[in-house]
Image (cartoon, rainbow, N blue to C red; front, side):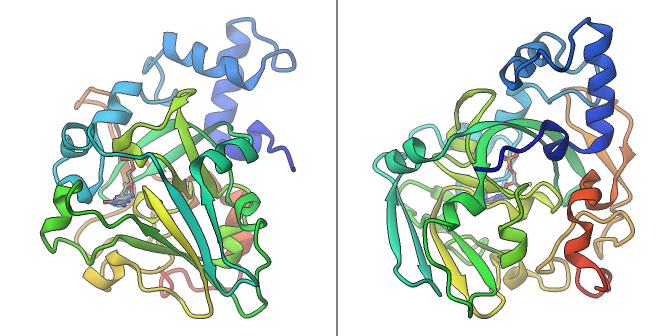
Length: 302
Ligand code: MTE
């Protein structure tokens, strides 16, 4: 397994600040383990805009329309959601489809701390210390046929437990999609935990993905199916409003949402007076991912 360097999973601006921040505390980078970062971050939570968002904010300010459209709905209404037993099916353009239990996934793949920025299309952002591993590792469990060009992710459909699914707010089940090369990029993460603990229901337990250079809605929660496809999937958001939500949805300060600017964002840190900051191209991950889009008109393919 290719071990991802900390600098690879953290946008440069966060990485550099953190480096000098740690140096000022007398921690040598060589000696510090990834696990120790969260401890340091906890004690200095929110004293610096580039520090991880607090556990409380990450777990009480959410988008998860299956549990309601309010920001506190997922926290309030998902606590009884049953995530055991859980199976993820990988199917479509593969030699042999497989069903993997959550236990198998957790014992097969090594989750590590990955601090990643989340930029929501609505204009707020967080820095989140997920636990996870690269989606490519999971996809390598199957033999992908050469016809496969895209990957579709499907959230569980269970209106008994997910009260938001009782109303046609979106075309349920929630689906999202990536191009195959985006899905295979080492930064595209299967998330199994948060702040070194089990993933809370409101953040997509037991398993979600996270794509740090794209708007947050590309990161589907509570995934039960991963399908390799020939054609570009139509995600729930594209289906709801194709003018507003494109397939790519890369974070791009130069391409506005039809109803608002995407040039700046509001860091969530419990203080509504925190000034907005500039949004970075590809959410700050340009060095790692820009080559995926070379030659593409990102205004057209938004
Ligand atoms: N996944 C599902 N199944 N349903 C959703 O409503 N919302 C998306 C994404 N994944 C959503 C989803 C949006 S809009 C965002 S910004 C992120 O989840 C939020 O993730 P977080 O609540 O863990 O911060």
